[in-house]
Each structure stands twice: as structure tokens, then as C-alpha cells.
Length: 360
Image (tube, rainbow, N blue to C red; front, side, top):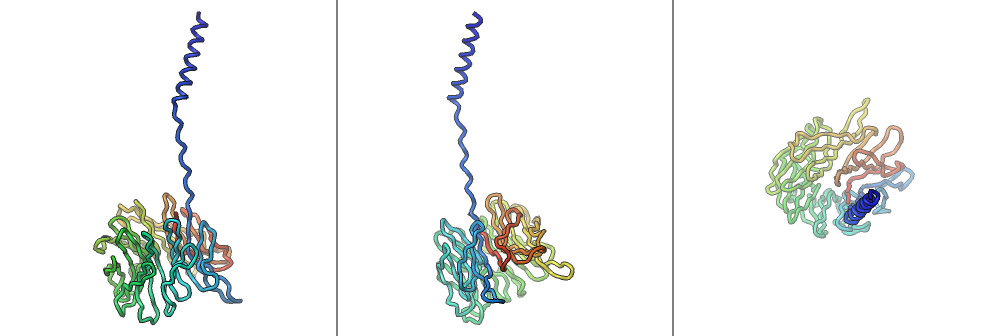
């Protein structure tokens, strides 16, 4: 009798286990994380004679180099990815140009006078380029090109340049410099003299928009050095300003803003045993905190000389690009730092530098 009861109990337990197993839902397998693609624009010098070398515009995709121009002096200054299309701006000889997917897309100037394309933004299939026409051209000044059509931003007779462009919805923001006036912000073509200065050292280098604010970095003058300005995107008024470093020989080259943080790529000229060299730095601050709370991280501890030209943040990863040279080996390398870790993009056999990074 006891054996029968035990058998029934075992059978009942087995049935409960089977029923529980059948009813239990399988945990969904999380989708694999999509690998990031890292785009870097810059230049690599090639030998054109026994003692001569010229730069060639270069695009690196995940570290693999692609020469955008093989035979002409050229430089790639900015890269921007929209959908499946990769846009790069820069120069070929004296001409400002746009490359799309590795091919020439727009020739913005005719080469009669030096022209420079400094910044690029793509929105709703419209391609915006900020730059300048210089030299003795009667058309010299700051320019914004939209789909290849030029619009002069500065008044006749004013020397200046447009260094960065940012687009949000229907609003187009451009920042640049005007000689003897200071830093200018153009909102949909209307000028705001956000920083008045007659100093040639007062320059804006980069612009980024976040919500109702714009963030501009550059230099205020040779005494104060690298600076960041927080600006009202509606009326161009400066809300907050802050010197990034306590030393005058710091330069702010690029700004990037995430939901919570502000990042600035920069470099500093330093002295060592009577000789000067450049060190690469990354400045970071919580967006909700005063700009004065920013913290500094040096990127180039082990290198002889380095410069950080551009910064981009994707998820939890922070990317900075520039150039680096080393004490223990010759050469000037194009470089990328990923979360502070240095990776060389070139082998050092020829001079190279990276100017812009974009991650998708």
C-alpha cells in the first residue's frame, strides 16, 4: 500500500514538472548589437619627388584608408554620414569641394582664388557647407553653400570665414569670424555678433546644437585661450561662457553634445627642456552643470606630440581623432583615440593627420 502511494506521488510530481516545463516561456534572445562603423577624414602625404611631398585627401572607414584624390594636392576636413551616403568636404588645390561615397560630388569654387570648406551638415538630403573665399578675391568672406549654391554671409569688404554649420529642423546655424569684429553667429542668414573683439586670436572653431541651446568653442584672445560659449538658439544671446583651461596656449578644436554631457577636443602647446610640443586633451562636463565644473583628461601621455582635432560620442564610446608622434619612433601618424586608447591610422612612413570623425 505504501509502495502504491509512493508511485502515485512520483507520477504526480513528474506530471507537474512536465506541465511547468511546457508552460514556461522561453526567454527572448536579445538582438546582437550592431557593429559601429567609424569614419575619419584627413590627409596623407605622398612623395612627389626626392624631397617633395603633397597631401592627399583620405577617408578611413574602420581603419581602412581610401584616397579620395590620387594625383592632386588635397585635404579632407569633415565627414558626415546620412543614411547610406558618406559625404566629405575639403579642398583640391584652391577649390572647395564635396565628395560623396568616394567620388567628387560638388565643386563649390572655380579655383581662381583660395577657397576652404571647413564644415559639413546634411539634413533632408540638403547638403550644407561652411567655408570661406580668401586671398585677393573681390568675393572674399564667409560663405554657406547649400546644395552647391553659394550664399555670402559677410558684408562687402569684410574679411572673415565660416568655420562650422549645424542644422536643426528648418533652422540653419553658422558660426565664424569677422576681422576686427569677433565671432559671428548667423541664424538663417541673420548675423549676431556674439563675441565682440578686435583681436585676431578671437576665433570660433566648432558648433553643436542641443535642444534650445547652441555650444560654440574657440579662442577668446591669446591671453585667455580656449573657450566655450552656451548660446540661446532663438536669439543668439550668450547665456554662459567659460575658459576651458587656466593656460593661454590651449586650443579648443571641436565640440560634441550628448543628452547629458559636453565634450571638447583640444590641444595645448607645452615646453620640455627648452623645446615646445603639443599635447592632446579631452574636456568633459555634465550638460546640466555650470560650465566651470568641466574636467580635463589628457589623451597623449606616452606620445612626444599630439593634437585632438575632432570628437564624436556614440552610446558609451568616445572617439577623438588627430595626429601623434612618438619619442621612440619617427613619423607623424594620423590617430584615433577610442575611450582614451590610442590607435594609429597610418604607419608613420609619411606625414598624416586626421581632422574629423563620424560614427554610425
